[in-house]
Picture 1 (cartoon, rainbow, N blue to C red):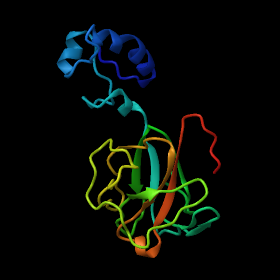
Picture 2 (cartoon, rainbow, N blue to C red; picture 1 turned 60 degrees about the vertical axis):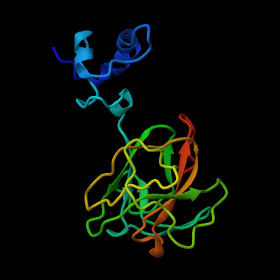
Picture 3 (cartoon, rainbow, N blue to C red; picture 1 turned 90 degrees about the vertical axis):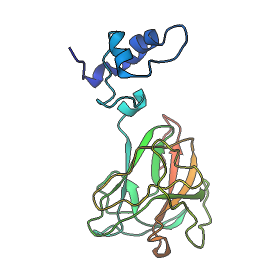
Length: 199
């Protein structure tokens, strides 16, 4: 019988996968090896993604139309076009949990966008680049978003990016290469698990 319930993921991780690793300490490298060990993969039915792939990605909405307002943030100045989730009408400083998966979703019904790492910020502010200085080539899945040159590539209307990784705790500037000159940018605050959000 094929197990699909995600509620047993913790049990599988704690009990079955270490047993499969054996003395060598490495996991089986193909589905048939898991099957021969009596275990069916449950990674959202997509092997060989890791157990982390079963974690629902944090979603960051991308939109500079549909009534999404620019905001003059007291710490970072004018921000626009990015927010936690997919339904906000206000631009936000985005907060993510460190080392967790994250996806960027273009909820704009009018235009295409990108998301790119622009540089480090701080808890007390940032100096925005005068012109867009981010990456221009889509980064591979699981890339940490604070990697120099990280970019989602073009996000067409209604589409999501690949699943990336929020990476280490810190303060990071992101922006859209198409609309940066119009002010489409924000700061992402990546927090350690369990940290209390200030937003």
